[in-house]
Length: 633
Image 1 (cartoon, rainbow, N blue to C red):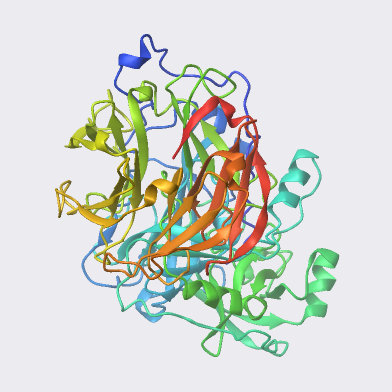
Image 2: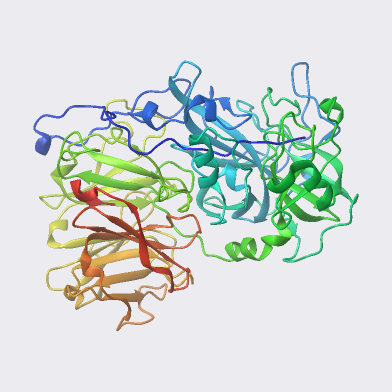
């Protein structure tokens, strides 16, 4: 194995002249229509302005391939483990290692990410990259930050229990799981890598290259968690035998597809040897190196390669490193790993976090904003159009965590609705959808159509009416698990201040179609937010803003009642925002954030510590010119 998976550089965010899609006439009377472009071979439709948000071909991650088959489907595929892969003529050959049986490495998984990129001719299309990860719990997987951050229009899957995770393989064993949220070390040096690319200089290697994926679908208990090296643990002695495991390519030049599981034994190298090879770019605190390189004939060396990124290096059964980078060709120098003993406490802290529900539309675990155009402008060809602002998964990326704008896929005509909301798993499918209220009080659901089975409505199935009479409420909010039953809810506030809750039955209907009153006096707030588990205890929270800008927190008890029925003040000065909301986690630390839009269009982000406190209570600007939008959801 050997590895130099390139970091995922993103394009510049705003693209002049990128307004494409359907030109609407009489938009106030048109039902919303999407204009996503069709994609071949059962892949999802491309964004309407795919070429403008796609990764340039020269910046596609090393080892990535053009997608030609449908994306995986979450679920189990027979037995927990397959046998060893069968290598035939034309497949990669292992460099100094052996084909591995996944049952012998039950905590090692493949991580496959799809994204939009240019091909050699400048046409946008679907690509996928392969990485490796390790199981930390049934819903947590450790991998590399550069496998997780800023893949345009990304969708990520974890594939467990298989020896051959390549595209198009018909699995008879194993499990596929979807990603719901992510944690990335906030010091990850994406910005330095991007700035070097812009300046046409040699980029620095990945630094603080660790991420944790939180899964929507719990893994089978047979995929047992690995044991991590303790924080501050001493490094193994020079020459200590270590085991590397991964799904990477075994071609030193990285020209063949990754996806077959194999393992090898390599010696751990001391810092002085690593520094002698790499110089000052090798960080002795954050990194370690290992391998048996052969500079003249790399195919005779032993090392990690493209596709092994995020995978483990074990010593005495403990994971001491996360595969990160190296020089090409693979096995010509030592492989470099993120040193787990420098990150173990932070990784373990994320394992203990209750999974939050991100407003993630594409499936990479990163929150995305949907915004509705109030007027024409830089992102808006017409009023009523909905634009998606995609999240990169890293607030320190130099772009405020914004990876791009999809100007056209959601179409126009959305100004027929007086309320727009995002909801996850309304049909108990863990997929996102939009719920909208029209002027007559009708409540409509737009379910995502991932395969564009109805090209006239992509990216949605035809809308479904799920309620009427909802104009009796002057505000409606979404919560994800207010009753402790795992089902999403809608809350409605009446003009008299009464608060009512309605719970989904998971089949498109209601458990309590007449609603249940859960509070009074809520008319004192001009805005009510539902950020999720603000305290990090798994119980849902409401935030209310008074006209004078004071912000109050109310926590549920998980059974329809309140922990603090009188509320707790947590802030002031919030009247400066015309719109504010919670996207879940925006900056990539897997903890709830708030964002607000000022009248001049400035967007500010406020990060929390996941336990009802602020990391950045002063906020920071992440974007501007949002005054052309009248809804953020």
